[in-house]
Structures are given as structure tokens and as C-alpha cells.
Image (cartoon, rainbow, N blue to C red):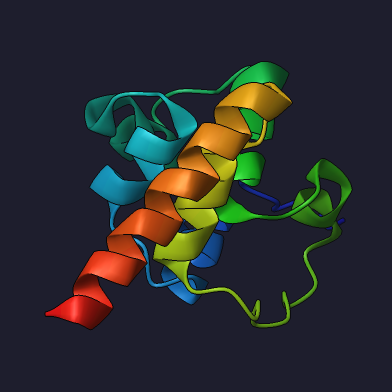
Length: 112
């Protein structure tokens, strides 16, 4: 890691690679858009917990965040990543309910 590493710049770089708006990333990471903007402009220094939430929302490991290497394009699009991030910590019962809802919605869409 070079001496000019900037957390805010790195977050912006990764967010842009994933084609996410500030609003989308902030929503997925459960922080405000204003706070994310301040982080990206290097006006605020986020805690490790906030960086971890942002990494989760971006679909990367915390260690990859600090590696500064180009991140490979994820097979999943940004909206799919947001869905996964929102449900990953739920218990299996909730995940099953969500899965059934998705299946039902897709079935209804096909019937149209």
C-alpha cells in the first residue's frame, strides 16, 4: 500500500467499477448518502465497521479493499449484489420466505 492511499478515493473507485450510485451504495451499506459523500471527499474518516459494511455492499473482502489491485468484474450485477447483501445475515427461515417470494414473482411475470 502506498503512502497516498485514500479510503475515500478507494471507495469511489470501487463504487464506480460496480456501476453503483452513491445512493445505492449508501442504502446497501446502511449509511446516509451524505456520509458516504463526505467519506469519498475525504472529509470524514469512517470506522473499520463502516468500511466493512461498505465492502460487504460492494461484494468484496476487507483485505481486498486495502490491496489496491484492480478488482475483477463480479459475475453478479450491482442490483443482485445489493439483494444478497441485504439478506445474507438473515436466518434460514427468512431466507426461505424471500426465496419463495422471488419464485412466486418470477412465476407471475412469466404468466403475463
